[in-house]
Image (tube, rainbow, N blue to C red; front, top):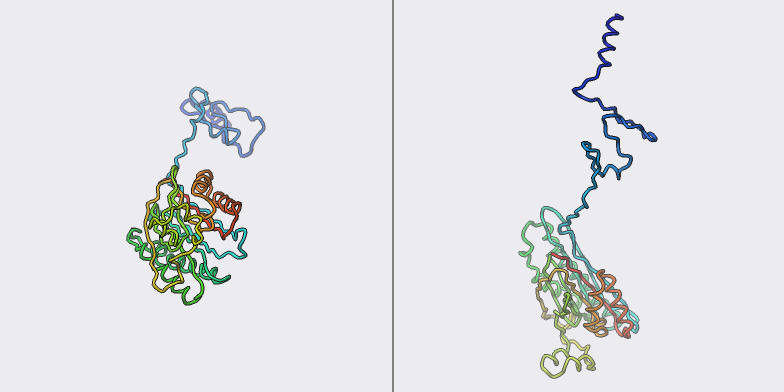
Length: 329
C-alpha cells in the first residue's frame, strides 16, 4: 500500500505538456491577486471587459467606435395649445388630438386625428357646438377608420377615409341643429395615415403646410371677404382689415344641407402641418408662423410660442393651434 501511494504521488507531480490546467475563477474578488502563470488575468471592471485582449502578443487593442444603426424609429409628433385670449371671458374653441404608432409584422403606418372647431353663438352656445363637433368627429373617425385599420390586414388605402371624414362632419352638423339650435362652429379636421393627410374643412379655421422654404395655406376660408377676394372685389390687404372679415357663409349648425371641403395631400418628409383657429392667424402673420415653426424642433414649444405671440398682439379672440411634425420617411 505504501508503494502504491508513492507511485501515485510521483505520477501526479509530473508535468503534462499536452495541456495546461487553468486555475478556477475565484468566487470573490481579492485585492491585488497574483496572476496565474499561463492564464490571462481577469479584467477588474466591466469597462476592462469591453477591451479585447490579444493573448498571443500581450497587447490590448481599443475597440473601434460603435456604429449605431437606427431604422425607421421616428414617429408622428404633435403639440397642442389653446387659450381664452386677452379679451374673451370663455373659450369657445374645441381641440382634439389623437396619435397611434406601432411597430409589428403587420407594418401599420402611424395614424393621427386632429380637430380644431371654433364655436359661434351665444355665451355658451358656441362652446357647446364646438365641443359636440370635436367629440362626434373623433368618435366617428375612430369607429369607421381607425378601428377597422387595427382589425384588418387589408391595405389602409382601401379604407374609405375621405367619405368617412365627410360623413363625420355631416353627422356633427345634424347633432348641433338638434341639440344647440342657436349655436354654430367651424370645423377643420385632418386624419394622417403614414404620409397622407385627409382633410375635412368648413369655415375659417385653417391648415398650413410648412416646409423648409415655404408656408402654404391648404384650406380655403368660407368667409365673405374671401369670396370678395376671389371675385377681385377686394385685395388680401383690404380683406384683412375689412369690417366683415369674420362673417362666414358656411359653418356647421346653420343648415341641414352642408357642403364639406375635402382634400388629400401627401406630406413631405420633415414637414410640419399646422391647424389653427382664426384667433391665431388673424393676429400672427404667415412669416411669423413660419419663423417660429422652423425655429423650434419641439412642436409643443412652437405651439406655446405662437399662442404667446397672438396674445402679445392683442389676443382679441380665443386662440387654438395644433402642430404636427412629420417624420423622415
